[in-house]
Image (cartoon, rainbow, N blue to C red):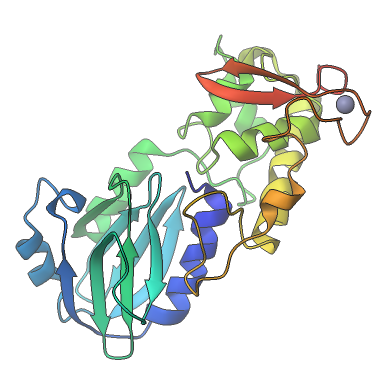
Length: 269
Ligand SMILES: [Zn+2]
């Protein structure tokens, strides 16, 4: 599933293509994308609007419109966007603008599109999501406050979008390795020093991934069709049994918080 760096990379691509342009028509070819609303109602509501900006909150993409509406996309497992060209397999939606055709493609069909008034959409997201990890307001004190009293593992806590928005299995494992924190550490017991290290590690891995255009594992690609390269820079994700980049010992793997988790038992305590 795309995580913050992949969604942010898509946001940048959509912002270049859509911002300042008028949506002439919208074609929705899969009613599941917008359920429980009808495809026709969503098409009518979006047609004629001009995109004023493309934003992101956690793993959600937000098309801000001059009508006062916000169109909120979640890519889930396999959603992606492409621009112009021929109709693609598994295409679910087209935005036909005054300049381009933007195609939403989703083989497994878990992606969603919701449209509503700006304030309604933003408060819906704020009720589901904690702070943005790349914003200065998120620091070790904020993190520790959100972990206080939690008996879950730090792995589970970081996957919880209400603790911090946008992280998933890949970047949680990479950040914990960077911070030297074992995934089974009880979240509520994290010291301030270790919380500070974790905040730094989260920002470092997200920044590196953004610079790499995200990671390409299956269906994710950038809006212009190019692939990210962060998968070549993972230190733990997908590397169980391989040597730790820091100490050379074999990386260990287990299911933690319901997810395959890879870490170094020597470097991470
Ligand atoms: Zn190690």
